[in-house]
Image (cartoon, rainbow, N blue to C red; front, side):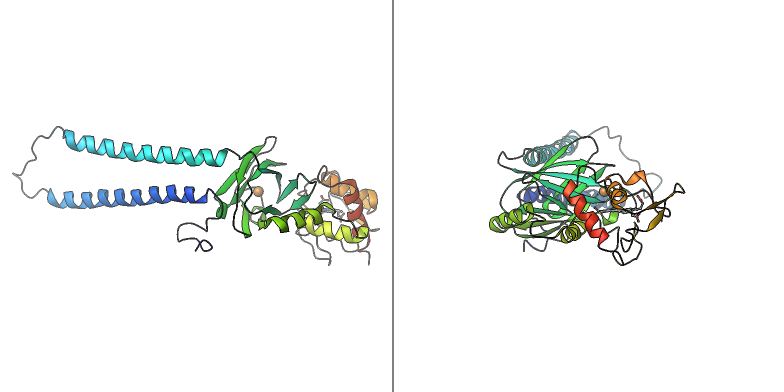
Length: 314
Ligand SMILES: [Cu+2]
């Protein structure tokens, strides 16, 4: 039952989702009833009082106190109910519980990245424990994006140069779709993510595994892992096909043509600069859409990516 949702709404998987839905249905069904009354009244009255002959005249009616009071008081009460109900629900969604786990959410064209207190950075996947309040501290590195998890009834804008705050608590384990719901450019529709709700134990394991990311791996293997987890993969292929950016296959040691007309040899410094400050040198034939990874990747992660790209020499 909880897993399927209804005709009107997707499944309700956060602690406050049921409140949102209750109010939604209240507004929906009172609107339906009022709509029916108005349309029925309209049809009935237009038939009942149709002018039938030249001599038939309407009496000079000035007002009807009872009727006017009714159509003022009932809607006022309904609006007050919606206000109080909505305000209580709103406060519940705005006031973050004190014991919430804080996660930094960064939006940029065109992916979501999540930073944990334990130093973990996860791209495209928000992993949280079930039954715990999660506070999201959201911002954007470029344009306005908006975080949207329909199953949680959670939606909050990500705005450059400012933090916005949202929170949720999910009690059911599972995977939930996350969207960007503010049009932010060509790849907006692909700016998707997942929320994975794990049991407390699984969440702790995930934290342990990921806070030691890269340990026990060679630099190249670590680089491949970063390539897959840090959002490079949708834009850069490994097999020579051109996606949004050039393929990494065999680029190391070769010349590339830049839009400025210069050519450069792909070496360690060029790759480092391309990752941290991609706008510095734009490869000819491509748009300058790569996000800067300055401040996102640690120096050792940049090293690992360089080692990985090097290893793709033919
Ligand atoms: Cu976006």
